[in-house]
Length: 524
Image (cartoon, rainbow, N blue to C red):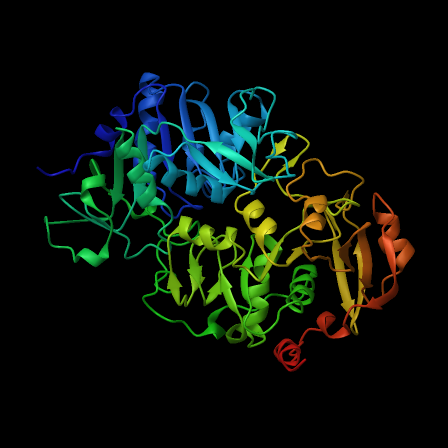
Protein backbone atom coordinates (compact mmCIF):
# COMPACT_ATOMS: atom_id res chain seq x y z
CA UNK A 1 0.00 0.00 0.00
CA UNK A 2 1.31 3.42 -0.95
CA UNK A 3 2.42 5.65 1.95
CA UNK A 4 1.78 8.86 0.02
CA UNK A 5 -0.68 11.20 1.72
CA UNK A 6 -1.44 14.94 1.62
CA UNK A 7 0.18 17.45 3.96
CA UNK A 8 -3.22 18.31 5.42
CA UNK A 9 -3.87 14.66 6.28
CA UNK A 10 -0.42 14.37 7.85
CA UNK A 11 -1.11 17.40 10.04
CA UNK A 12 -4.24 15.72 11.41
CA UNK A 13 -2.17 12.76 12.62
CA UNK A 14 -0.36 14.86 15.24
CA UNK A 15 -2.14 14.57 18.57
CA UNK A 16 -2.31 17.01 21.47
CA UNK A 17 0.69 16.92 23.86
CA UNK A 18 2.83 14.97 21.38
CA UNK A 19 6.61 15.25 21.41
CA UNK A 20 7.77 16.14 17.90
CA UNK A 21 11.41 15.61 16.85
CA UNK A 22 12.74 17.53 13.85
CA UNK A 23 15.90 17.00 11.79
CA UNK A 24 16.99 20.36 10.34
CA UNK A 25 19.64 23.07 10.10
CA UNK A 26 18.43 26.42 8.82
CA UNK A 27 16.08 25.23 6.09
CA UNK A 28 18.10 22.11 5.28
CA UNK A 29 16.04 19.05 6.15
CA UNK A 30 13.01 21.18 6.98
CA UNK A 31 9.60 19.94 5.70
CA UNK A 32 8.07 23.37 5.15
CA UNK A 33 4.96 22.08 3.38
CA UNK A 34 4.10 19.83 6.31
CA UNK A 35 4.74 22.66 8.76
CA UNK A 36 2.42 24.97 6.85
CA UNK A 37 -0.33 22.35 7.09
CA UNK A 38 0.20 22.02 10.87
CA UNK A 39 0.07 25.80 11.24
CA UNK A 40 -3.10 26.01 9.12
CA UNK A 41 -4.83 23.27 11.12
CA UNK A 42 -4.04 24.97 14.42
CA UNK A 43 -5.29 28.36 13.25
CA UNK A 44 -8.53 26.79 11.96
CA UNK A 45 -9.24 24.28 14.73
CA UNK A 46 -6.96 25.03 17.69
CA UNK A 47 -5.33 21.62 17.30
CA UNK A 48 -2.86 20.14 17.92
CA UNK A 49 -2.12 21.71 21.33
CA UNK A 50 0.66 21.69 23.92
CA UNK A 51 3.31 20.10 21.73
CA UNK A 52 6.90 19.55 22.85
CA UNK A 53 9.22 20.44 19.95
CA UNK A 54 12.77 19.05 19.92
CA UNK A 55 15.23 20.43 17.35
CA UNK A 56 19.01 20.37 17.34
CA UNK A 57 20.12 23.22 15.09
CA UNK A 58 19.22 26.52 13.50
CA UNK A 59 15.44 26.40 13.22
CA UNK A 60 14.58 28.39 10.09
CA UNK A 61 15.48 31.37 7.91
CA UNK A 62 14.90 34.04 10.60
CA UNK A 63 11.80 35.15 8.68
CA UNK A 64 8.63 33.15 7.99
CA UNK A 65 9.91 29.67 7.22
CA UNK A 66 11.02 27.11 9.77
CA UNK A 67 9.90 26.32 13.32
CA UNK A 68 8.57 29.85 13.60
CA UNK A 69 5.50 28.33 11.85
CA UNK A 70 4.70 26.84 15.26
CA UNK A 71 5.05 30.12 17.15
CA UNK A 72 1.55 30.35 18.63
CA UNK A 73 0.50 30.28 22.25
CA UNK A 74 -1.29 26.98 22.82
CA UNK A 75 0.29 25.11 19.92
CA UNK A 76 3.61 24.58 21.72
CA UNK A 77 4.11 24.00 25.43
CA UNK A 78 7.85 23.23 25.53
CA UNK A 79 10.77 23.76 23.15
CA UNK A 80 14.01 21.83 23.58
CA UNK A 81 16.43 23.26 21.05
CA UNK A 82 20.06 23.51 20.14
CA UNK A 83 19.50 26.95 18.61
CA UNK A 84 16.58 29.36 18.85
CA UNK A 85 17.71 32.50 17.05
CA UNK A 86 16.32 31.67 13.61
CA UNK A 87 12.66 31.20 14.60
CA UNK A 88 11.45 34.70 15.57
CA UNK A 89 7.88 33.90 16.68
CA UNK A 90 8.98 30.90 18.73
CA UNK A 91 11.82 32.89 20.23
CA UNK A 92 9.36 35.60 21.31
CA UNK A 93 7.25 33.00 23.11
CA UNK A 94 10.38 32.05 25.04
CA UNK A 95 11.34 35.65 25.78
CA UNK A 96 7.78 36.50 26.86
CA UNK A 97 7.81 33.51 29.22
CA UNK A 98 4.85 31.90 27.44
CA UNK A 99 6.40 28.47 26.81
CA UNK A 100 9.01 26.35 28.58
CA UNK A 101 12.39 26.41 26.85
CA UNK A 102 15.62 24.47 27.21
CA UNK A 103 18.78 25.02 25.21
CA UNK A 104 20.84 21.83 24.98
CA UNK A 105 24.08 21.42 23.03
CA UNK A 106 23.46 20.52 19.40
CA UNK A 107 25.61 17.41 19.56
CA UNK A 108 23.80 16.20 22.65
CA UNK A 109 20.40 16.35 20.95
CA UNK A 110 21.51 14.54 17.79
CA UNK A 111 23.23 11.84 19.85
CA UNK A 112 20.21 11.46 22.15
CA UNK A 113 18.16 10.13 19.22
CA UNK A 114 20.42 7.06 19.15
CA UNK A 115 20.10 6.55 22.90
CA UNK A 116 16.30 6.69 22.54
CA UNK A 117 16.36 4.32 19.56
CA UNK A 118 18.37 1.76 21.54
CA UNK A 119 16.24 2.29 24.68
CA UNK A 120 19.24 3.31 26.73
CA UNK A 121 18.56 5.56 29.74
CA UNK A 122 20.38 8.62 28.44
CA UNK A 123 23.56 10.23 27.19
CA UNK A 124 26.59 10.51 29.46
CA UNK A 125 29.10 13.17 28.41
CA UNK A 126 31.32 15.94 29.75
CA UNK A 127 29.81 18.36 27.23
CA UNK A 128 28.27 21.29 29.10
CA UNK A 129 30.23 21.10 32.35
CA UNK A 130 30.97 24.56 33.70
CA UNK A 131 28.59 26.27 31.25
CA UNK A 132 24.98 27.41 31.68
CA UNK A 133 24.00 23.85 30.71
CA UNK A 134 25.45 22.58 34.00
CA UNK A 135 22.50 22.11 36.44
CA UNK A 136 24.59 23.77 39.16
CA UNK A 137 24.45 26.96 37.06
CA UNK A 138 21.24 27.14 34.97
CA UNK A 139 20.55 23.62 33.72
CA UNK A 140 19.93 24.85 30.17
CA UNK A 141 16.76 26.70 31.21
CA UNK A 142 16.13 29.77 29.06
CA UNK A 143 13.37 31.52 31.02
CA UNK A 144 11.75 31.57 34.47
CA UNK A 145 8.76 29.50 33.31
CA UNK A 146 11.07 26.53 32.82
CA UNK A 147 11.33 24.72 36.16
CA UNK A 148 12.00 21.02 35.65
CA UNK A 149 15.59 19.78 35.87
CA UNK A 150 16.33 17.53 32.91
CA UNK A 151 20.14 17.24 33.34
CA UNK A 152 22.05 15.62 36.20
CA UNK A 153 25.68 15.71 37.34
CA UNK A 154 27.03 12.20 37.91
CA UNK A 155 30.44 10.78 38.79
CA UNK A 156 32.13 7.81 37.13
CA UNK A 157 35.53 6.64 38.38
CA UNK A 158 36.25 9.99 39.97
CA UNK A 159 35.27 12.06 36.90
CA UNK A 160 32.28 14.36 36.64
CA UNK A 161 29.85 13.92 33.74
CA UNK A 162 26.47 15.27 32.73
CA UNK A 163 23.60 12.82 32.24
CA UNK A 164 20.95 13.80 29.68
CA UNK A 165 17.90 11.59 30.17
CA UNK A 166 16.05 10.07 27.18
CA UNK A 167 12.36 10.71 26.53
CA UNK A 168 9.39 9.52 24.48
CA UNK A 169 9.19 10.68 20.83
CA UNK A 170 5.75 10.60 19.23
CA UNK A 171 6.34 12.20 15.82
CA UNK A 172 9.38 12.70 13.60
CA UNK A 173 9.43 15.31 10.81
CA UNK A 174 12.13 14.64 8.22
CA UNK A 175 12.84 15.44 4.58
CA UNK A 176 14.52 13.97 1.51
CA UNK A 177 14.69 14.20 -2.25
CA UNK A 178 13.07 11.04 -3.65
CA UNK A 179 10.73 8.69 -1.83
CA UNK A 180 9.28 5.55 -3.29
CA UNK A 181 5.76 4.47 -2.43
CA UNK A 182 7.17 2.18 0.27
CA UNK A 183 8.71 5.19 2.03
CA UNK A 184 12.36 4.60 1.15
CA UNK A 185 13.94 8.06 1.18
CA UNK A 186 16.98 9.46 -0.64
CA UNK A 187 18.80 12.75 -0.06
CA UNK A 188 20.36 13.28 -3.49
CA UNK A 189 19.79 17.04 -3.64
CA UNK A 190 20.28 17.69 0.06
CA UNK A 191 23.54 19.30 1.14
CA UNK A 192 23.57 17.43 4.44
CA UNK A 193 22.06 14.22 5.81
CA UNK A 194 21.60 15.57 9.34
CA UNK A 195 20.09 13.19 11.95
CA UNK A 196 17.08 11.97 9.96
CA UNK A 197 18.02 8.28 10.31
CA UNK A 198 18.52 8.05 14.11
CA UNK A 199 15.50 10.31 14.68
CA UNK A 200 13.33 7.99 12.58
CA UNK A 201 14.70 4.96 14.44
CA UNK A 202 14.04 6.59 17.80
CA UNK A 203 10.48 7.51 16.88
CA UNK A 204 9.59 4.06 15.52
CA UNK A 205 11.01 2.33 18.60
CA UNK A 206 8.88 4.65 20.75
CA UNK A 207 5.80 3.57 18.81
CA UNK A 208 5.50 6.97 17.13
CA UNK A 209 4.98 8.00 13.51
CA UNK A 210 7.55 9.25 11.00
CA UNK A 211 6.43 11.81 8.41
CA UNK A 212 8.75 12.52 5.49
CA UNK A 213 8.51 15.28 2.88
CA UNK A 214 9.99 14.47 -0.53
CA UNK A 215 10.22 16.32 -3.83
CA UNK A 216 9.75 13.32 -6.10
CA UNK A 217 7.88 10.02 -5.84
CA UNK A 218 9.15 6.76 -7.33
CA UNK A 219 7.59 3.35 -7.85
CA UNK A 220 8.31 0.78 -5.11
CA UNK A 221 11.70 -0.94 -5.17
CA UNK A 222 13.12 1.24 -7.95
CA UNK A 223 15.69 3.18 -5.87
CA UNK A 224 19.22 1.81 -5.62
CA UNK A 225 19.60 0.58 -2.02
CA UNK A 226 22.82 2.56 -1.44
CA UNK A 227 20.96 5.78 -2.23
CA UNK A 228 18.40 5.14 0.50
CA UNK A 229 19.30 7.17 3.62
CA UNK A 230 16.13 6.38 5.60
CA UNK A 231 14.60 2.96 4.83
CA UNK A 232 10.89 2.65 4.25
CA UNK A 233 10.38 0.41 7.29
CA UNK A 234 11.00 3.54 9.39
CA UNK A 235 8.73 5.88 7.42
CA UNK A 236 4.96 5.85 7.96
CA UNK A 237 3.83 8.64 5.65
CA UNK A 238 5.29 10.54 2.69
CA UNK A 239 4.16 13.98 1.53
CA UNK A 240 5.16 15.09 -1.96
CA UNK A 241 6.14 18.74 -1.96
CA UNK A 242 4.01 20.73 -4.40
CA UNK A 243 5.96 24.02 -4.30
CA UNK A 244 9.75 24.39 -4.68
CA UNK A 245 9.57 27.33 -2.24
CA UNK A 246 8.79 24.74 0.43
CA UNK A 247 11.86 22.62 -0.24
CA UNK A 248 14.83 24.97 -0.12
CA UNK A 249 18.25 23.36 0.14
CA UNK A 250 19.58 26.26 2.27
CA UNK A 251 18.09 29.40 3.75
CA UNK A 252 19.07 31.27 0.56
CA UNK A 253 18.84 28.92 -2.41
CA UNK A 254 16.50 26.27 -3.74
CA UNK A 255 19.41 24.20 -5.03
CA UNK A 256 23.16 24.62 -5.47
CA UNK A 257 24.69 21.47 -7.02
CA UNK A 258 28.04 22.20 -5.39
CA UNK A 259 26.49 21.81 -1.93
CA UNK A 260 25.14 18.36 -2.80
CA UNK A 261 28.43 17.26 -4.37
CA UNK A 262 27.12 17.11 -7.93
CA UNK A 263 29.61 19.65 -9.30
CA UNK A 264 32.92 21.15 -8.23
CA UNK A 265 32.91 24.91 -8.67
CA UNK A 266 36.06 26.99 -9.21
CA UNK A 267 37.01 28.55 -5.88
CA UNK A 268 37.40 31.81 -7.77
CA UNK A 269 33.60 31.76 -8.03
CA UNK A 270 33.42 32.36 -4.28
CA UNK A 271 33.31 36.14 -3.96
CA UNK A 272 36.17 37.58 -1.88
CA UNK A 273 35.22 39.49 1.26
CA UNK A 274 35.33 43.28 1.24
CA UNK A 275 37.99 44.84 3.45
CA UNK A 276 36.20 45.47 6.73
CA UNK A 277 36.58 44.60 10.39
CA UNK A 278 35.23 41.12 9.54
CA UNK A 279 37.94 40.46 7.00
CA UNK A 280 40.68 41.80 9.29
CA UNK A 281 39.49 39.50 12.08
CA UNK A 282 39.23 36.50 9.73
CA UNK A 283 42.72 37.15 8.36
CA UNK A 284 44.31 37.41 11.81
CA UNK A 285 42.41 34.33 12.99
CA UNK A 286 43.57 32.40 9.92
CA UNK A 287 47.16 33.00 11.03
CA UNK A 288 46.51 30.41 13.77
CA UNK A 289 46.19 27.73 11.07
CA UNK A 290 48.88 25.12 10.59
CA UNK A 291 49.47 22.57 7.81
CA UNK A 292 47.14 19.56 7.68
CA UNK A 293 45.01 20.60 10.67
CA UNK A 294 41.39 19.46 10.94
CA UNK A 295 39.33 22.62 11.40
CA UNK A 296 35.78 23.47 12.41
CA UNK A 297 34.26 26.84 11.55
CA UNK A 298 31.40 28.38 13.52
CA UNK A 299 28.78 30.79 12.26
CA UNK A 300 29.30 34.54 11.81
CA UNK A 301 32.72 36.13 11.46
CA UNK A 302 34.42 32.82 12.22
CA UNK A 303 32.93 31.29 9.07
CA UNK A 304 34.73 33.97 7.04
CA UNK A 305 38.03 32.21 7.75
CA UNK A 306 37.16 29.76 4.95
CA UNK A 307 36.61 32.63 2.50
CA UNK A 308 39.98 34.11 3.45
CA UNK A 309 41.69 30.73 3.05
CA UNK A 310 40.10 30.31 -0.39
CA UNK A 311 41.07 33.83 -1.50
CA UNK A 312 44.63 33.23 -0.30
CA UNK A 313 44.87 29.87 -2.09
CA UNK A 314 45.43 28.07 1.22
CA UNK A 315 42.35 25.83 1.37
CA UNK A 316 44.32 22.79 0.17
CA UNK A 317 46.71 23.07 3.15
CA UNK A 318 44.03 22.36 5.73
CA UNK A 319 40.92 20.21 6.26
CA UNK A 320 37.81 22.32 6.81
CA UNK A 321 34.75 20.69 8.37
CA UNK A 322 31.33 21.68 9.66
CA UNK A 323 29.29 20.13 12.44
CA UNK A 324 26.54 19.29 9.95
CA UNK A 325 28.80 16.59 8.48
CA UNK A 326 30.76 18.18 5.62
CA UNK A 327 34.45 17.33 5.35
CA UNK A 328 36.82 19.16 3.03
CA UNK A 329 35.99 21.82 0.50
CA UNK A 330 35.15 25.35 1.59
CA UNK A 331 32.39 25.81 4.19
CA UNK A 332 29.78 28.37 3.18
CA UNK A 333 28.91 31.45 5.20
CA UNK A 334 25.35 32.36 6.24
CA UNK A 335 22.71 32.11 4.84
CA UNK A 336 24.15 28.85 3.47
CA UNK A 337 25.88 27.91 6.75
CA UNK A 338 26.43 24.20 7.34
CA UNK A 339 26.96 23.50 3.65
CA UNK A 340 30.28 23.38 1.83
CA UNK A 341 31.44 24.08 -1.69
CA UNK A 342 33.29 21.07 -3.16
CA UNK A 343 33.11 18.87 -0.06
CA UNK A 344 35.23 15.70 -0.16
CA UNK A 345 32.72 13.82 1.99
CA UNK A 346 29.37 14.36 3.69
CA UNK A 347 28.56 12.21 6.72
CA UNK A 348 25.66 12.14 9.16
CA UNK A 349 25.24 14.83 11.77
CA UNK A 350 25.50 12.67 14.88
CA UNK A 351 28.53 10.82 13.52
CA UNK A 352 30.38 14.09 13.02
CA UNK A 353 29.74 14.95 16.67
CA UNK A 354 31.16 11.58 17.76
CA UNK A 355 34.40 12.65 16.12
CA UNK A 356 34.20 16.20 17.47
CA UNK A 357 33.40 15.17 21.07
CA UNK A 358 36.34 12.79 21.08
CA UNK A 359 38.80 15.57 20.33
CA UNK A 360 39.01 15.12 16.55
CA UNK A 361 39.16 18.86 15.85
CA UNK A 362 42.66 20.32 15.94
CA UNK A 363 41.48 23.91 15.71
CA UNK A 364 38.11 25.65 15.77
CA UNK A 365 37.10 29.22 14.98
CA UNK A 366 34.00 30.35 16.87
CA UNK A 367 32.06 33.55 17.52
CA UNK A 368 32.66 35.96 20.38
CA UNK A 369 29.58 37.96 21.34
CA UNK A 370 30.58 38.67 24.96
CA UNK A 371 33.83 37.99 26.82
CA UNK A 372 34.93 38.64 30.39
CA UNK A 373 38.15 38.68 32.38
CA UNK A 374 37.96 34.96 33.12
CA UNK A 375 37.87 34.16 29.42
CA UNK A 376 34.20 33.12 29.56
CA UNK A 377 32.27 33.53 26.31
CA UNK A 378 28.56 34.19 25.86
CA UNK A 379 26.86 33.61 22.51
CA UNK A 380 23.53 32.30 23.79
CA UNK A 381 21.54 34.89 25.76
CA UNK A 382 21.73 38.67 26.13
CA UNK A 383 19.52 40.14 28.83
CA UNK A 384 16.21 38.59 27.74
CA UNK A 385 17.13 37.93 24.08
CA UNK A 386 17.61 34.20 23.52
CA UNK A 387 19.79 32.75 20.76
CA UNK A 388 21.06 29.31 21.81
CA UNK A 389 24.37 27.51 21.56
CA UNK A 390 24.09 25.29 18.49
CA UNK A 391 27.23 23.16 18.34
CA UNK A 392 29.30 25.81 20.14
CA UNK A 393 29.57 23.96 23.46
CA UNK A 394 30.46 20.55 21.99
CA UNK A 395 33.04 22.12 19.72
CA UNK A 396 34.58 24.70 22.05
CA UNK A 397 35.04 22.25 24.91
CA UNK A 398 36.57 19.44 22.87
CA UNK A 399 38.75 21.08 20.20
CA UNK A 400 42.48 20.91 20.84
CA UNK A 401 42.66 24.70 20.37
CA UNK A 402 39.97 27.36 20.04
CA UNK A 403 40.08 30.79 18.37
CA UNK A 404 37.22 33.15 19.19
CA UNK A 405 36.44 35.80 16.58
CA UNK A 406 34.45 38.99 17.04
CA UNK A 407 34.51 42.76 16.73
CA UNK A 408 35.74 44.68 19.78
CA UNK A 409 32.44 46.59 20.09
CA UNK A 410 29.11 46.29 18.27
CA UNK A 411 26.16 48.45 17.37
CA UNK A 412 27.35 50.90 14.73
CA UNK A 413 31.09 50.23 14.70
CA UNK A 414 32.75 51.84 11.68
CA UNK A 415 36.42 51.47 10.80
CA UNK A 416 38.71 52.51 7.99
CA UNK A 417 42.20 51.51 6.97
CA UNK A 418 44.85 53.92 5.76
CA UNK A 419 48.26 52.70 4.62
CA UNK A 420 48.06 49.55 6.72
CA UNK A 421 46.85 51.33 9.86
CA UNK A 422 43.48 50.89 11.52
CA UNK A 423 41.30 53.86 12.42
CA UNK A 424 38.09 53.75 14.47
CA UNK A 425 35.76 56.18 12.70
CA UNK A 426 32.76 55.45 14.89
CA UNK A 427 32.79 53.33 18.01
CA UNK A 428 30.14 50.68 18.55
CA UNK A 429 27.51 51.46 21.16
CA UNK A 430 27.81 48.13 22.97
CA UNK A 431 30.88 46.81 24.79
CA UNK A 432 31.61 43.16 24.16
CA UNK A 433 34.47 42.74 26.63
CA UNK A 434 32.47 43.04 29.83
CA UNK A 435 32.92 42.56 33.57
CA UNK A 436 30.65 39.50 33.61
CA UNK A 437 29.03 37.72 30.66
CA UNK A 438 25.23 37.38 30.74
CA UNK A 439 25.47 33.62 30.29
CA UNK A 440 28.42 31.20 30.30
CA UNK A 441 28.49 29.37 26.97
CA UNK A 442 32.24 28.73 27.21
CA UNK A 443 33.92 28.41 30.58
CA UNK A 444 37.39 29.90 30.85
CA UNK A 445 37.81 28.10 34.18
CA UNK A 446 37.03 24.72 32.59
CA UNK A 447 39.40 25.48 29.70
CA UNK A 448 42.23 26.23 32.11
CA UNK A 449 41.52 23.03 34.03
CA UNK A 450 41.87 20.92 30.87
CA UNK A 451 44.77 23.10 29.62
CA UNK A 452 43.05 24.05 26.37
CA UNK A 453 44.75 26.89 24.44
CA UNK A 454 42.38 29.75 23.56
CA UNK A 455 42.95 32.93 21.53
CA UNK A 456 40.50 35.85 21.24
CA UNK A 457 40.77 37.87 18.02
CA UNK A 458 39.22 41.28 17.34
CA UNK A 459 39.96 43.90 14.68
CA UNK A 460 42.10 45.96 17.08
CA UNK A 461 43.38 43.59 19.76
CA UNK A 462 44.27 39.94 20.32
CA UNK A 463 44.06 38.20 23.69
CA UNK A 464 45.23 34.86 25.00
CA UNK A 465 43.74 32.78 27.84
CA UNK A 466 46.29 32.29 30.61
CA UNK A 467 46.05 31.06 34.19
CA UNK A 468 45.15 34.55 35.48
CA UNK A 469 42.52 35.08 32.77
CA UNK A 470 42.70 37.14 29.57
CA UNK A 471 46.06 38.59 28.58
CA UNK A 472 46.41 41.23 25.85
CA UNK A 473 49.13 40.08 23.44
CA UNK A 474 48.65 42.23 20.29
CA UNK A 475 47.14 45.54 19.21
CA UNK A 476 46.50 46.84 15.70
CA UNK A 477 48.80 49.39 14.03
CA UNK A 478 47.37 52.89 14.41
CA UNK A 479 45.41 51.99 17.57
CA UNK A 480 45.93 53.79 20.88
CA UNK A 481 46.17 51.26 23.72
CA UNK A 482 44.49 53.40 26.37
CA UNK A 483 41.87 55.23 24.27
CA UNK A 484 40.84 52.53 21.78
CA UNK A 485 41.33 49.36 23.82
CA UNK A 486 41.47 49.64 27.60
CA UNK A 487 38.90 52.46 27.83
CA UNK A 488 36.41 50.40 25.82
CA UNK A 489 36.54 47.33 28.09
CA UNK A 490 34.59 46.46 31.21
CA UNK A 491 37.68 45.12 32.94
CA UNK A 492 41.43 45.63 32.86
CA UNK A 493 43.24 42.67 31.32
CA UNK A 494 46.73 41.57 32.05
CA UNK A 495 49.01 43.12 29.42
CA UNK A 496 51.80 40.95 28.09
CA UNK A 497 55.29 42.34 28.70
CA UNK A 498 55.93 41.29 25.09
CA UNK A 499 52.93 43.15 23.61
CA UNK A 500 53.18 43.07 19.81
CA UNK A 501 51.65 44.92 16.89
CA UNK A 502 49.25 42.88 14.75
CA UNK A 503 50.74 42.11 11.29
CA UNK A 504 50.35 45.15 9.02
CA UNK A 505 49.59 43.08 5.93
CA UNK A 506 46.16 42.02 7.17
CA UNK A 507 45.07 45.67 7.12
CA UNK A 508 45.83 46.14 3.44
CA UNK A 509 43.40 45.61 0.52
CA UNK A 510 45.56 42.77 -0.81
CA UNK A 511 47.33 40.43 1.60
CA UNK A 512 48.64 37.31 -0.13
CA UNK A 513 50.75 36.03 2.77
CA UNK A 514 48.60 33.35 4.42
CA UNK A 515 49.80 30.38 2.37
CA UNK A 516 53.43 31.25 3.00
CA UNK A 517 52.71 31.83 6.67
CA UNK A 518 51.09 28.39 7.08
CA UNK A 519 53.85 26.65 5.11
CA UNK A 520 56.52 28.18 7.36
CA UNK A 521 54.90 26.51 10.37
CA UNK A 522 55.47 23.16 8.69
CA UNK A 523 59.12 23.98 8.28
CA UNK A 524 59.32 25.07 11.92
